[in-house]
Image 1 (cartoon, rainbow, N blue to C red):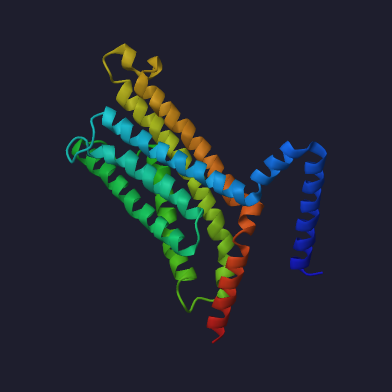
Image 2: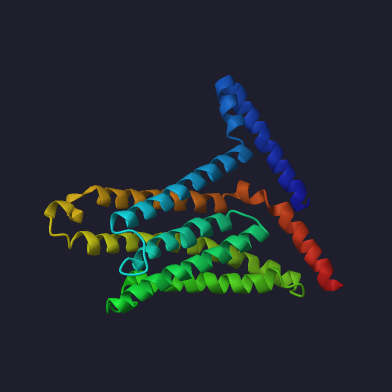
Length: 267
């Protein structure tokens, strides 16, 4: 029996079981099951991810406005959290949830905006005579950003270069997917470290004890909520990418892509 026939029988038996469950529990269950079909569930999760991504970006901007706003003097560092949130978190997550061309465009934009964020932090440290790359946050951050930069360059050469072998493309795809999932999870962890680090540095130096981190002023609550939304966002993105039913939505497209690449290579 071929894989396609086996998959068809599995899907048929699963559909039959769902129909039996719906009949047993009545019309309410039938409505819920229909509403939460795999296609509807995918789009529902995607909408939630986009909303959470916007919330993350808004939180980072509000945070920077509260500690001085944006500028090219002493406030140049404030571009760093916003750029890294937009690049390594929001755009990176959207890239791994999209198909080939849009995937490359989003990841390329994520890399550019993230390196701008790194540059803003570096310039700030340089002018303030603060040591560079001494913290765990900076070590892991540079590792993640260099990793995703190398991944995008090698992926472009692998999946877009016309003479690349179709067999090589298919062999490297699982590693590319694993690297993308690892990077979004690592980026979220690095971001939470950075939020805590910056909160401690900026709030605990306040002469007013009521405005220090331990007293939970409004900005501290904002940062904690920022971190909580970030964790929920990352869990949902990783779940969407690894959920077998969602991955199966793209299997036919991938198969046709590799069939075309194999034919082009042989010619």
